[in-house]
Length: 360
Image 1 (spheres, rainbow, N blue to C red):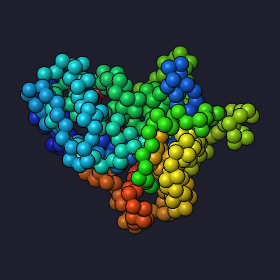
Image 2 (image 1 turned 60 degrees about the vertical axis):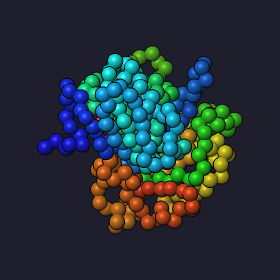
Image 3 (image 1 turned 90 degrees about the vertical axis):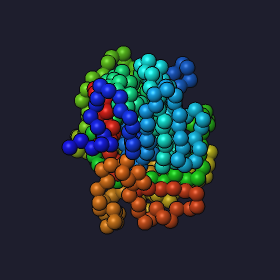
Image 4 (image 1 turned 120 degrees about the vertical axis):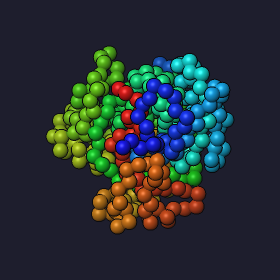
């Protein structure tokens, strides 16, 4: 039986869609590997969906008007959700409008892709609400114009990401438990990328079957790679950023373990730590409790991989629907956070909960 929240595609428009999730992402690593002539930095990263999510509700309007209603703190007047709705309306010539209600659960200025995820869920929901039934391929160019992270959420799979974020290679990542905290401070992306502390990474991952972003060939993205597909890794044997480069061919089993143990780094982390001591404090907070820590995106949220032995008994229940449990699973240790900080114990998601809302 089909859930009323997730009805099958229909040629006719629907009246409403409620409790639509917009999950966050974490960057398990993020390397800055170059810079384009137009000033945009080239990145390599592994994006992973997690079960901490905003919740959106959509009600179709017959007058073509687009309105957003905030259920929490007020968002910017013309946010990515409205821009996504306007872009899809203009591209499709659709005469319908929509009332969008947002229950904002994800912290802003965190580097977790909250605004981009909201925009992607808006595109996917309106594709269904308005009876467009466009393919994912048709939605992706609209997503890219909205922001570099939006195509990832529309794609709906964990992915190895290159370019400025628009080149995606689906990757199957082992299930992860992750403690995520966001300190009170928010740091502007522009501030991070303009920092003199930002350095180009000398570690470049090559996913098997996925050509480099700048080699002029097309990638076959029809099938996801596994984490074991990171079969070739450029590694600086000195541990630094200069010279001594060699190619280390590892077995798939070793590379899966390396990925789980936190291969790589976030090259945006040093500038963020310089911009705010709270980022360093948050990293130390997780390091003390879980033995590892790393910033996601351009910050200021940080996360730690949680080993099974550190998971408490209250966390054994499975969370499969971030829309029904948008606050993820609480961990008692996260209640010790300083005032103004927020945190959740999260699980990685194998696929976006709206993955089936657009055909490939």
